[in-house]
Length: 259
Length: 357
Image (cartoon, rainbow over all chains, first blue to last red):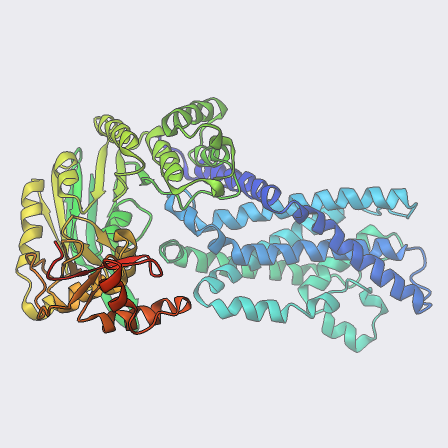
């Protein structure tokens, strides 16, 4: 057998795992993909109804369902990434018997799968938006794409770190899923940072996810801006977890394979 | 060639370190088919996985310029909801094969495994035999410097076994083998050299015969105290089979677990009903003997392998274990006297041990 470079091995393993993941999801739970759409859809309908029941005048120049859709799709994306990366090692443990397959490949391939799911659901949502005549025009398309991709990279760092820790301390995963419950309300999905009272604004801006959501919102809707987005803070949160995650991963890779 | 440098490997169980290897330095030369011997729990499989690069030493390094297969016959890597074909494709992709090569591999595995239409059905509906056919075929479809085999030489029916063995022998002409096996004949047929692993040390023998001799020697020279302390719950049988525990042995011979327990605890391992000798892993095999406890006239042996001092004891035994049949105290005595010992309720036949052949 001829020698391959480690990058070409990595590439072929990630592609193989990616296709495998897609085949399994299609094979076992056909509803799996549908949920990716039904889930945010029900959330949007519910919150839109609540909003109109409260006679909230909403944000002028924005269709509230579209506002919710941008937030919820992003939220579901990184929630799936987090769950996916934390369970990636266990789900693929049997495959570590193939010496090409490294634990991190499982995380990277899931990352691409979730991206695919995100883009599929975005397409469906855009079709819905057009059908119902909602205003879905984008202010700065490139910046929105950048924000989503950045969020993905931010989250892959966190994902690797969490996956490594979960591998050695099982309870960590439970703690994380418990802590992440309030994230739904604390990530700026339902409101803009600007609409909050100053003290709440200050506190919520410590949450890095808020910055990503604000960046998406601010670049999507022409009436919103990105004044509260702190790019340095986002870079910090992207690089530090990624660095620590990769550091621990490299230290622990052999143990993860052997365990 | 495989180089082990200052290799130490241990597992921590309940805070205690269990050593598989202690500071081992060794070079395994190229072009040698290597058999790995050792008692159960000595760490043969771990050593094999470490040599194959899918497990790692705690301290030290193992390095080799060669390519290694995955453990042959590995079915764990198969994804149940995917078809056989999809699973094969997955492995091909891992190995960086292109579409044309993938088709060739698939064709080879399909022909070798002979599982017909099942090839395009989800693996979860396969029998275990079909799964091993598929994985065995897959292992043969690639070219490696070393094939890693952990006790999976015998899969499927006699025909397939022969085919698999022939194919393997042909494969060995161009690659080498690292084999863990309890079958001395397999070791003799396939391997040139042997490694004996025992108590954290490994011994390399250039001739597999010497390794086998040494293996028998450590089994024979175990001090009595150690002999009686089983290393694991594994059970070995005089017909060469070994089992993970008493229950699996009992299932295999279709007797009650009590039958094996009785043999081990009360009769030096000799099972009267099966006419076989069992011993716990780590202990020595003793010669077959007849029932050593006193044989009264009414000592009874059942067709599921258990010996009872009398009919009353037998009835009580089955009352506990088959509660729904409402066996009464006299049931066994009654069938012994009236039905020639055949109990329809229990689906068991009883014999007097004095008359049992």
